[in-house]
Length: 100
Image (cartoon, helix red, strand yellow):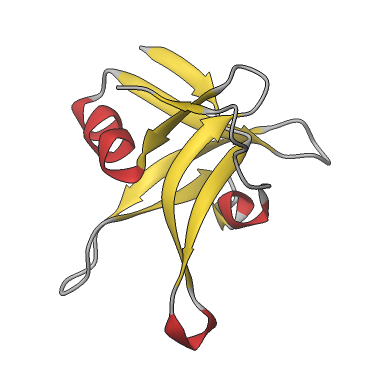
């Protein structure tokens, strides 16, 4: 399985103060993928995506969350449980090209 670090996101602001991630990517490597593409790739088992915990350096893997009545979304997880690392990432810049 191929693994890729994610260090930026693109957000769509929603009413009520909630944010929805539309893309994840990597600033230095100049790429980004749609949320839907990442969901397909993770669920197929072909690829894994992760963020790095700044304090420990631990990988927090991106998982697909499916809740009844809601579209699937991405969230990070590590040994201790769910984390909000994706929401803390900076925005992907204009240099991040859409791939796949």
